[in-house]
Length: 579
Image (cartoon, rainbow, N blue to C red; front, side):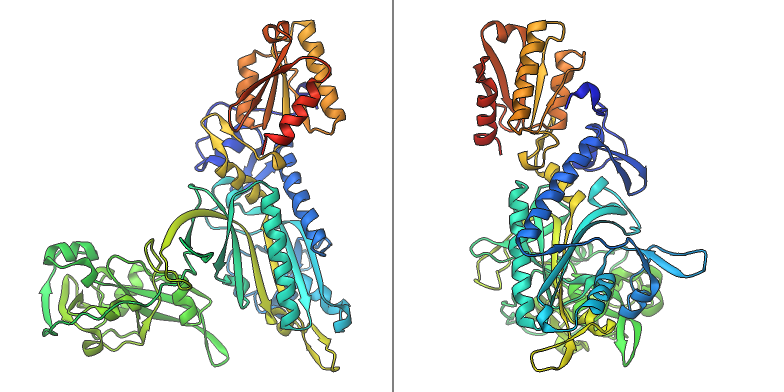
């Protein structure tokens, strides 16, 4: 491809709306253009990257035995009502009516549609296992879309769904997808980690996330320093391994704590270790079953003053569909005070206490009265609690639940998520099949997603420098760019064209920057866009019988002979030195 005939418009300034590096660089490199909040056009360079990621995904899905199909992005409400998610998915589900006043939505996911397809086509164990997948545009009406392709409202996703007659078969299908995902991200040239994860709104019995490691990642990953255990911060277990303090239990004492609103402020004011000044938070839990009806309940949760409440763990303990911190007015209505004065003594709500507080005595808690706290509280003596639970975020230095070594914290970007769904959707939607004994039973399902655009963006978050993107070769828009430095020199143009044509014939995905621009402009654009290899043909080096090859990642410069074997040597460098 000749750049003079291509569509690449780069920019030097950093766009004001772009917060993360991938968003900045994709805009600057002319890969995407914003249409509306969270919605982007893929320009030619960006689309090339997207297609390369898709092809890697498609190749590995096919190798794993999955079969591709394509489902409609528009979905009827009836399917979502069958699964029970129409009223519970939230505002992220973009609903609309057609001219006949029938309810539809834009699909953020396709569990309902694929279950309906299989329900109508599969009725026997002899037709399973089967795994179907698509690469499709989806829409989720995020309340705060940001970070470009990292958290958009419209996005491209690969979603696969497995169907088996029993759990044993479903486990095999799950493992095949697990292995395929490892192959996908390895083939994309991305350093990644597989972590235990919460199943979230999708549901199911267990799941794993695939995290691209990057310092700029918005997800926290806790990993054992010794064994292979890793989990995201929502899921990471905290081992209950403390020792009870052996001290005299003192009588309760109410003390004034004027204008002290945080655990740290109270600890410093009273001269107490912050570990003895726990935080009490009120959590709103929605979708809790009460018989056959769902309701919203409020609970109080306590963690040490130097720890943080883990809402996902709270949600799972109370068996809610969602859990969020209560609003200030809700706290005031229920407890008669602000958050900073909450405590478990005479708390009108159920109180769930983190395991770490099992081992401390004579603690300081809010008095449920504005600007007052109570000293020398001992929970088993002075408060009515539901018990002790793991309800806090793990920290570096906490013990691994498998081997006892320490956790370390890293940051990552979730690019893939796989779930063992079980029979959640097949039961609610009536997708059943005959087993070997002739019994009609619900089909066991799995669900497997990869964010295509998110994978492309995460590759940038992991691979960039002050000059621009450093693409892994497998997903680069072009593997190499040939730059004729002096566009008014016939010998330079002739040699550059010759190398370009030879590389094309060798199957290299190559661009020639034949614009009538200064060399500095071309070099800056090449660095910004991030081609793995830059081949510079200049008057000076050519007069010495040489061509300059620059490896973008390492900045290594290699001078090769400008003879008939130049393209072969460039191809060899691309194959052996460029990742």
